[in-house]
Length: 352
Image 1 (cartoon, rainbow, N blue to C red):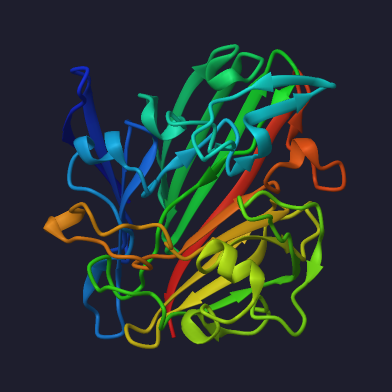
Image 2 (image 1 turned 90 degrees about the horizontal axis):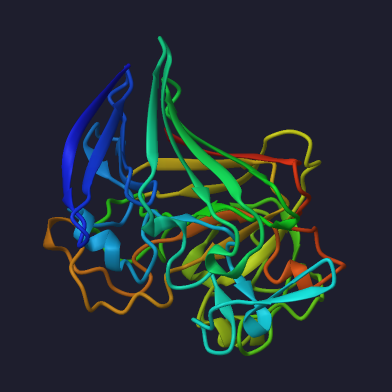
């Protein structure tokens, strides 16, 4: 295993960003940057042995400073949406930025993907890791508590990208960390992901109102276009006449995972028949947001000057449920002072 460091350009504030590239003995590589603790590249072989980058993103740090779509992004303090842009903690409402209509999305316009991080490298015989850490101060983004956070990315020789999220707060707060990478197993510049197949180990999902805030209902996927319990092509029912899909313009929904919560378990799979690549997703978090890039607007260049269009990538955002602070029936993203937040998500790559 080896880790290489390269300059990733300077931020608009003159900070020097670094790109860290992890390479395993099978030739898979993952590149990460200390700007935003973002995933920049995931390069894996197809069935013909051809290597390609399977995540959407940008060539330099400048792209990630904008990054409206959230490519590769580390998201916090609270991933996904909070209704009314107001967090309810111990009966007190904390006002948040309204950056999604009247609601708060991914904690505001400056999520954790737009801060610089301290970096530590760990090199082992069969796995290499990069840890990004910082202190999110009390009332940053509107949330109470000084939150000590770290996200550690590990590449193993089994072609696993392991992400471990850890955090501790000195006050009761909300904490819901995720990664917003967009995957395209035919290569980042190959166009639509509608021909990919998806499996989700989830019997139910959380429908939303017309502003994409969960209603509080937990609805069975049985007999609906939301059912991915067996491998199904993304495009098969994405345009079905079904209200949740019409509201979101495709899949942009939280699924209730069938897991114990005590172990890291397989919860999803993404398959491309064209490239032969497979990605399995493992986690110990209770939910996953399946998002099919419905809001990619085709207005900017990504890597290699390629312009990403709508549905050019698919996200598997492991998480606590959206708006959980206002929904007592949902798994809670409440983090008690001095308690440790420690969750893991794994993206494992292989071939059919």
